[in-house]
Length: 136
Image (cartoon, rainbow, N blue to C red; front, side, top):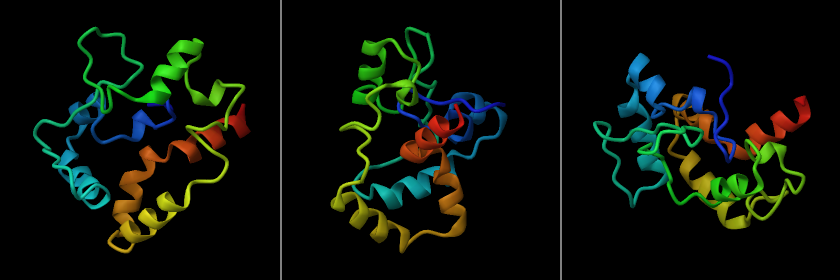
């Protein structure tokens, strides 16, 4: 599968809850364990978590975050994803991440294994969009 970017820059082709990946090899239990480290106040059920991808044109598509503000912005502008936007980086993808984000990431990474890091590769939107823009 070639690179498939979500509207905000996630890599659907690497995402372990993206329906085509689940159908090929179900590894949702592994990613839910990592998600629980990142968001300890949320519950993740490997049996039910799934995403059709925000590029899906299905009317009943299941999305990881149906209220995603980046998705709404991209659809409003009529572009495929944030990497195509003339305003990138913007308030959704600032040039520098906020201090709170850095502190949270450092605390979470203290609990991570190398495998956790690899599993989270799909969700590094900023990194994915920066690489996309460099390559276009």
